[in-house]
Length: 351
Image 1 (tube, helix red, strand yellow):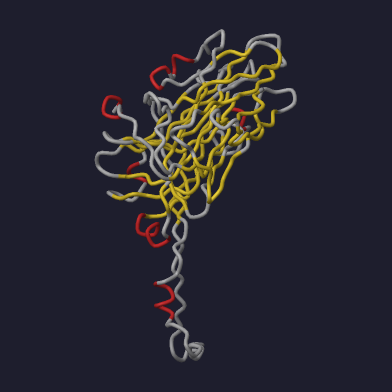
Image 2 (image 1 turned 135 degrees about the vertical axis):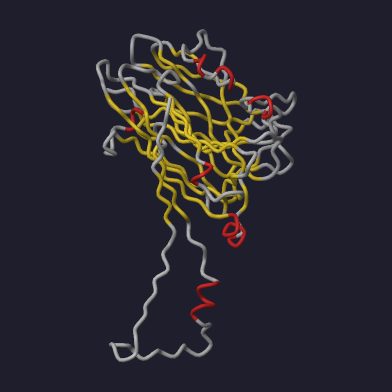
């Protein structure tokens, strides 16, 4: 399996305006009293967000694929980022395109990840069908170390729930907005850590695509025809900590989270069982006549909402299956948190 990369790195250009004496030169204007020199103003100008465009290619859609069964491609991107440094990711958007780089339906997007992994840590920013772009709250960033012992990758997977006969070449066009480490420090950005909160309900059947993600301990199930509500303790994939299943610290706060559902999913809610309160509920809008999520909600807030390690949390997921057959399902929040979060322990084993 091969992938070819197309990359464009955009940095704000420095425009020079030079005129020679006797050739239409305009007399130099005096600076206003108390104004700093132009070179000093440039030195203190606020850093601009950099934009990196990458193309993850090689997808061929030739039949129906339910979630987690479609073609997958990966691409290392260490060489596309500033070497031996940390980049602070603020945003990521993914567009589905064809072999000629023309936009096609987002219904073919299962998920797209920007992922890093080192022997000691790891994390990822993700988008999926219904949420093809994410932007962190103002003043925050997701630090991605691009160092020698780190693996930085793009990972994408296709799905096709609606077309029996199809022959479509496809690619994923990533647009990543980031600051250099130096610029992030100048701006005073606060680091956010990714936290995946996944449901594992007591469902009667297992998603047939489970073997694709069994190593990640992701949780899929089948929903029979009709409307169904599922409740499940919150699970953090690849993390086991009795008494603290999310690895929450003393000052952990959620600043961003987005709904992750499969087609015909209606909503996901984070419930605090200790207080009986709903922390947040997000909804999805489904297409008419197709199994496709058109939009799913996101929560984004500078102040954030606290998580308490001595509280018990669960997810409530609602699906409405209008077909006469079981459908694949998943319910999760892809979140970013500030404060303390216990690291997973098995990065070395999975490297």
